[in-house]
Length: 207
Image (cartoon, rainbow, N blue to C red; front, top):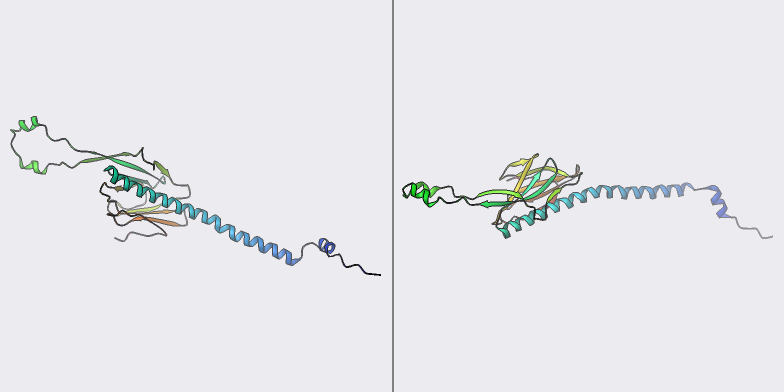
């Protein structure tokens, strides 16, 4: 009489999972968690990188706009409310004295006329026609500080700004954005070229 082979399937089902199988399942879960947690962290890092580069695009746009339109622009930063927006300059040239006023003075030449304050007066208004508008940073991202050595030094609160001039000149600016853990630095160190760079980490102005 031929003996029947043992039923391995039935024994395995009746005995449940072996220690090896349980260990393999735990190993797989551990690997999945190890891969998932850095991805969650990298999402915030990627968002910080993205927001810093969007700010760099605003720098490039405003420099070109100032050159093309022959008017100064400003990029305003609200450090307390985590936002920024663009302003455009309206240049008004003071009117020259009327002929009647000159005649009332006897029409004579005064040496002080050579040193009259004839510099244009600049007033800035919100650049409503530009593409920047008012940009609010995400809740998780804010300003660490802003370094404006030619204008205000290091600023950690309140309002600050970078000016873009019609000749292509840009205020030296070092802007630090952070997400509570990581920091990105946007900087313009050559005011003549106005070239803007973005780097991870906290890079400080050293003069």
